[in-house]
Amino acid sequence: MKSVAIMAIVLASVTCVGPVDAQETRGVTISRAGTRETSVAPAPNFTGAARVETLFGPTPATRAYAASVAFAARARTAWHTHALGQVLIVTAGVGRVQRWGETVQEIRTGDVVRIAAGVKHWHGAAPATAMTHIAIVEQGDGASTQWMEPVSDAQFDSPMRAAAQDASPSAESSRAQQLMGDVAPKLATLTDSVLLGDVWGRPGLSRRDRSLATVSALIAMNRPDQLRSHLALALQNGVTQEELVETITQMAFYAGWPNAITAVGVARDVFRAKR
Image 1 (cartoon, one colour):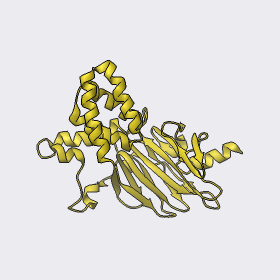
Image 2 (tube, helix red, strand yellow):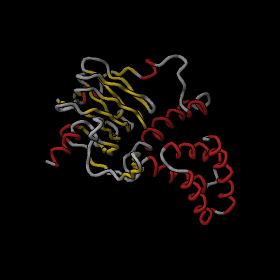
Image 3 (spheres, helix red, strand yellow):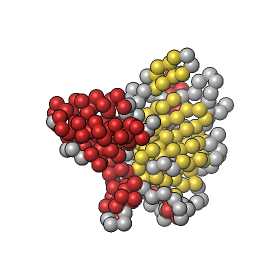
Image 4 (cartoon, one colour):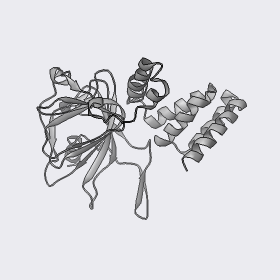
């Protein structure tokens, strides 16, 4: 029965592979970043490499469950429907989503996709860029997901309507585009699609762990301008202020006291801006 229950959640595009390490106090449960298990997405319902991290499951009082799904480039789900619909929140990279009979659409970091109940669709990464999204599904009285045929290469590579075509003229550009798009547009595009999309979307490390590695490297190289933005990103990725301060302290012994003192000044500004 346990394996049947696990597969029921797997078939909903979110996989329950083990208990979530959570702390509960007076009705408030915290599932700490880095404590949750991940599993390989099931081959019958996915094409390409994808990994699933359970975020939360249903309780006696609720029926929603969610997972973070990391797709390698070209990886995607099979065609499927959800009895009560689905919400996708893109957290990293560039991906694609398509409703049956309509044009493929591009989705990027920060996009939220709401899929209505009973709509046949698929979603996954872009051809050359990884993508990670949070998938939220509600469990109804019966099966919440109906899986169908795989998405063929021809369907995946079909002409696409880019996100830019759907955006308003006043839509905010990426940070890379703001910093260098007017001078080096190709470098800005590579920063968005390759560095922030592909590298940061790879499932081998969590975004939290990548932030810690990046912050440590920038402290060691004494790059305060880049460190500023990556400290802010680290906070978004679940690294605490205390962990960042401890990282700076640790790096003082390996990268030198002057580098650590510079990092402290940058961290002070970032932490104050977050208050």
